[in-house]
Length: 180
Image (cartoon, rainbow, N blue to C red; front, side):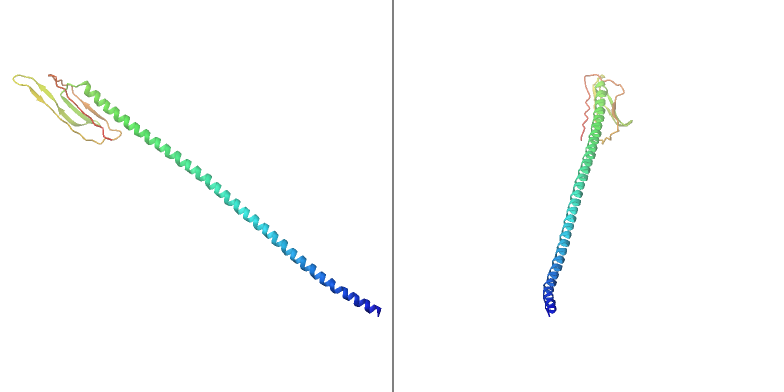
């Protein structure tokens, strides 16, 4: 009987051991699940950080490329503007030179009676101005030429006087107006 009582005592002490083992197993399971959740949370945090860094890098690259393109456009625009300004100055200088030549030709022959205006080698106007004091009367010949031309950059305009001279103190006047 002692043996049976001893067996019963052992059986009584086994039951709490089983409960302890069950509790330990439950604690281990919960610990494993907690560790798994913690690892997943860290992985998600790393994923978020990686996405944030990728977004930040993409925005920085976009900003750099945008600044480069803006600088390229500014440089191109400035180059084109300088080119246009240069062509404008060149055209104005050519026009001024043409008008200066016309004025010089007129000043060289202020008492001449015939004036021919040429455009690119072709006569576009002929005007006679004169004075004659042959007895019995004096005669005045006046002439007017009005031209409106649109000149192109390579056009050449000049005034020609074949060398007739006028007597009597009358002078010719030629006015050239440049309209922009």
